[in-house]
Image (cartoon, rainbow, N blue to C red; front, side):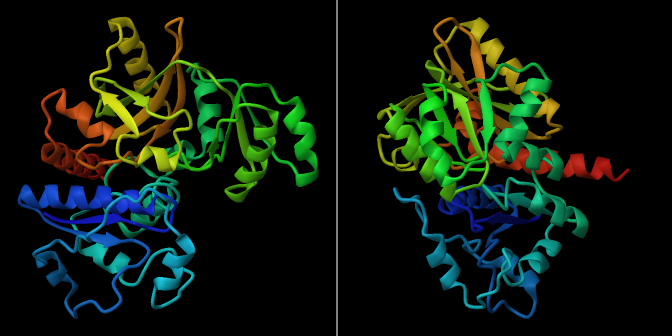
Length: 353
């Protein structure tokens, strides 16, 4: 099949997306597909007259990229685009996507997981991997997702939505319940997430988070074991337990060597395994998601799991969490990538009947 792996974009998770997309593209090429990677934001400035010849590129158009410790400088990325268009979709991207049998969405964060590119491809009649536009949009917005968790009886930390001015920060910092977590509702890769230790740090967090958003999510901080569990099709996979090496597991810590230890399957009881898996599957179905997703949890000292969030386009490097879980049920990385393609294609063909 001709497959476009759409990655990059202009979100704060741009570099992570390019690394994931490169891994997926190379895996699909090993499976015999004509897969190419296309950067959704940069596009192709001077493509060949016949765009179909791009699928014959021996390297799959994959960039030589690695995840840097620091988050990408998006202003620099914008300045580097030759056409300087305000469009978030680069030159010839949609033309190339139209030629593919399916688009593998390797995007992360806004513009990838928020439903907009899914809606665009739907309007073009181009099949793509993963969830549709509506479930993606709800899942990407942590506030909307928590409202959905509450409606479906899925345990999650107590939370509140805040909109405030600079002048209101001192009072909020003195009155909000502690310990808490301050989050940008549409952030990812731990960007825009703050774990204040005291009220002075809470005030700083309330100031800093406003660089990401206007509406702010503040939720109760629950201490316990950090778990994640993927849903693949109609079943949940073996969970992973993550042991961060630093207390503040931010973007820098997340992607540096030795930033965390991951154990798959997680060394938890059968009851906890079932609780987390069933919760992940319930949220996946409640949001109307399809093909795959990954949910994050805290397992407290009493054995109660609390759902933190759900990801509709989780990381897909060979060592990412979902591939680790899939390997436990006999799916290697290349087979997993191909399964996501085939399952998504079958789902969207069935929807047209």
